[in-house]
Length: 165
Image 1: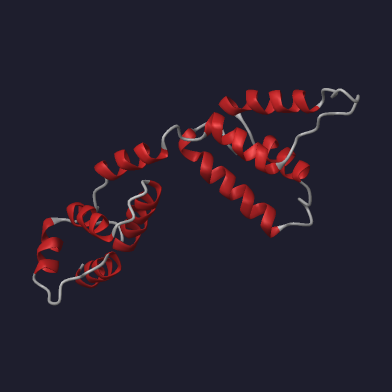
Image 2: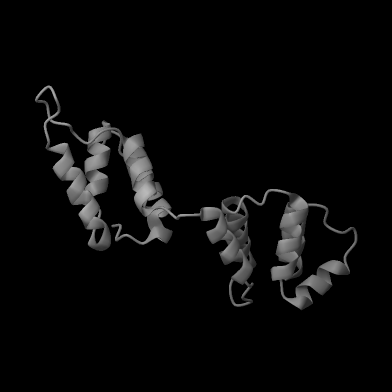
């Protein structure tokens, strides 16, 4: 279900894509995919589904139903209405407030920060390493600083942090 929460728009589309790929016989056409997606819109997103259904029932210039269009067009329109307005800025804000919580597994933190790097388009190893170090607790940064050889890329840094945590 999608209720209109912009932060969950991409997850909704990803979940649908996985459903369609796992059961291609049930969703063989763009129309089947679009109709399924529209059926999962609720609450603050329901108005948009109703507008799409109403538009699909209108006749075109040749007296044919307009239909629902392609899945690609649906995705584009959906993200234009419900997607994050500036995903890079959103990722930067989330990254700025992210902190490692020692009660969670470090692997979970690593997955979060890597997702934010990708979303925020932070691709340089040195930039990632600087951000990552700044988010680790002091005791773990100190342990890493005392090791030799020092990590030279993000993968090595995350591995070292995991080993020492």
